[in-house]
Image (cartoon, rainbow, N blue to C red; front, side, top):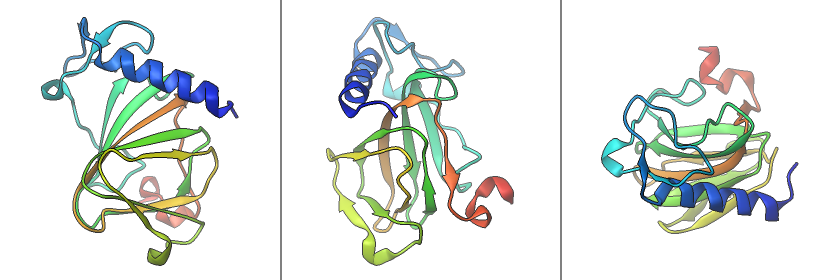
Length: 165
């Protein structure tokens, strides 16, 4: 596991690389390189289904290649009512709430009483291998996730993994 200070530095560099201004990611192209001056314009963000998420959820790669070692930035959109059942990630992550209210709870069992609500602008640090769950409880939400890949997701219960259906 990477020290949190190094993760924050890499995620910050990746975020600045993704909003700077010279190179612009375009539809059909991978995310911007993590350590090259560039920009991602809102109108060029390409949302896609992600096999490890419920079918209604969408993911967009903004910076880097989450499937490979190195810094990445992705955005995740969940429509109202959608749940991500308990799961964990092998990498440290930093979530930024872009819009809506982001509900996240810690633990290996989905428990609505453990959910905490985070408004737009909130930052959530999630250490690697921390079991957690999400619910778009009060409406749609969008988060931006920064991490150092490769990105991974492991559901606590195999039957909760959309890839198994």
